[in-house]
Image (tube, rainbow, N blue to C red; front, side):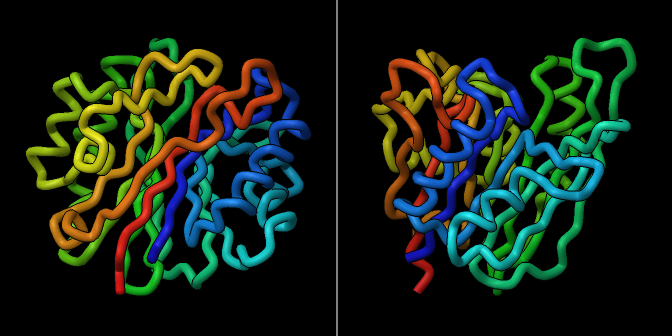
Amino acid sequence: MFRAVTLNLSYLGTRHGPWPARRALVIDALRALQPDVVALQAVWRTVAGDSQADELAREVPGYEYVAFEPAAENVQGSKGLALLSRGALAQIEPRMLGLRAGTEDPDRRIVLRAHAGDLCLYNVHFSWVPEQVADNVREALPFLRVRGPALVLGDFNLTPEDPLHARFLEEGWTDAWQALRPRDPGYTFESDAPSMRIDYVYVNEPLSARLRAIDLVGGGRATPPRLSDHLGVVVDLDLD
């Protein structure tokens, strides 16, 4: 069984607890779940080159492969996406997305693609600004077209009812949560009182029949610290 987790780390945000306390919870969750691959969004990396993903990889045995790609940089460090993997990652490729001027979101977005064996992995983190997320989806979809088995994980900042979500379905992607738990809303944000589902796992046609289980990660904590302002999502696929 192949297991993947997606989680928005909320950078160094403190609303749900300081990063050291949140990091300890993320470490405990990864040790318990033992995923093969972890897709992390809203990852901070210092100017010295040490990222939150690197911190997690040092503390959780088995994650020998870490790929970080910056989306926005300043004198203090970088904001970006990361993948942790137990197996080698190959053909690591970021796709930079456009940035509209004058919106409330000042950060450029990227899509990170990598291969774990025959499986193509995508990690995405789209904008919350309606016009910008529409641009993000339009620009990302061509990059997501591959022939073999593929998995898209991340924070889409879209609810299932949004017409932009339908664009992925039209492209042949399957919403893993909807496929496996159609009667469960699967809310992932905000983690203290989740009321919307904006974090997703999508699979393409070669993997749609291989979905086995999906669940949330990090719920049930009445008081901080929590993993993040998002709940994570864990998915199991039978790739044997």
